[in-house]
Image 1 (cartoon, helix red, strand yellow):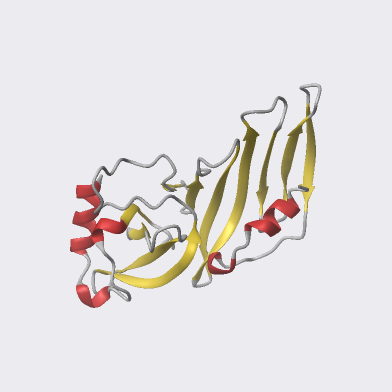
Image 2 (cartoon, one colour):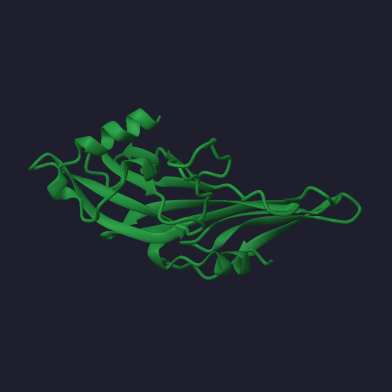
Length: 203
């Protein structure tokens, strides 16, 4: 995987990079047609500084000139574990974000919970390219406390329409389901606040 990411980085012309990117700090990358023009685009999650959220760089293919053009960098919006690749004894992290291409051209961004405490909440964002910017089209999470019985909840809703479903485990072990009905919003990924999403999920 690392060798593939390095190859992708070297394929980018240096004049196309809006910001310098250290190849060793590229956590993951994804190619796909984000804007529906039939040409492959690129997204890369890049580490910043220890304990700080990560950046994501978006490139769209310029079909006329045949190169990847940087169109947006969203700073410090992605949680994850700093790995310190240049440190002795480096081991792979189990809390690295994951990118997946969806059939409709949207991007699935999975953010695993950091291994802190007994309560873990994994989040998933669906990112879509709309009117020249990347927006959050969907939000989902699943939460569980590994040291307590019957403490778990989940939610999945469409941010654009405000519609979705949520569930919460009850003390007796049963699960209570609710319909999420919030105001539909268009939120740029750079302006995303997960706290608003948890509120919409009736937490």
